[in-house]
Image (cartoon, rainbow, N blue to C red; front, side, top):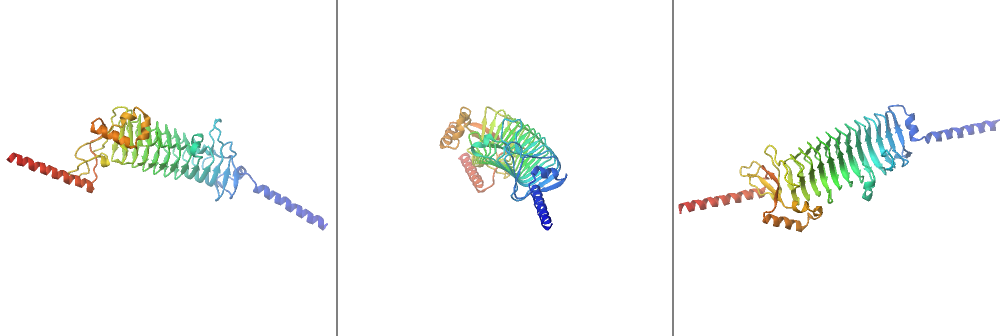
Length: 435
């Protein structure tokens, strides 16, 4: 009898242990489904099987080494409910097929008022895809693409489609096709993001009234390509080292009434490239050591440039395709032209005593052959410019009626020399009259 009781107890122990193992091995989808609305799912330091769908408000919080791995055939995490929080997780291995109707992502969001925070995404077609999703917050997300020759064959870091009033903050995107892609999405705020080694760091289509602050776009083919989009604010961003024959810091194409304020354009093939665009306000930007500071096509009219600082570009301004009507001063404030402008400021008001004409002859060769872009930084280009200057065959690219002057030691020396020459001339005239 005792043996029977002991055996029965031993059997119950094995059975309960088996139940514990089953419970421990619940799938992530089961954990999500069994957690009540507005509850929290705490994930362990392990890899969970993905392709999960969240259909109710939840918080899903990962541990240090939590991974959600998709099947490679769909979205790893799909959010259909509002008020979902996803935090502290690595998400990987979305579907990558381009032959399906849906473009897959590590996280696909179809709802509003969600928060994604402290997420790392790898080996996925798109990183995060917002589809008709509004008032979401994407913060401190790191998206790592394949980079190199694989850029064109993958998706975007953050893809924003018909989605409004979202906030994208302190995200890092490396090696995807485009870093952040906007399509028919309005009134979003993008701030303090870092995007590098992509095709376009920011790619913009048919999206209005968005704001971009303190972002950095570095080592991309193009920093920001803004197309068919209006009433944007780009302020305090950095566009650095975006190089290649057709590269740029910012491209404005059929983009109107935008504000480009206090940005830095450093060592790009073009700093600003403006085509078929009107009424853009460009103020207080540092345009430094680019091959072309600003490239303006004649199809672009009524841009206003004021208080920008041009310094050590191969050519500060290149106007192509004919005459264009753009303003290089606003309310009496022109631009700083660096060493290329020998200006006097006798009354010390910070403005030159005469208008400044910036001239160049590069349009002659670039309009005939785009391959000339490859040689802008070579000695032959400098020689070409100098010869045309001596022969008076260069052309006015920009006319600044109120150029700005730096009151440093060098400019003071020019003023002193000028005053001495004027004084000597005056004395000579007096002597001639007396004689």
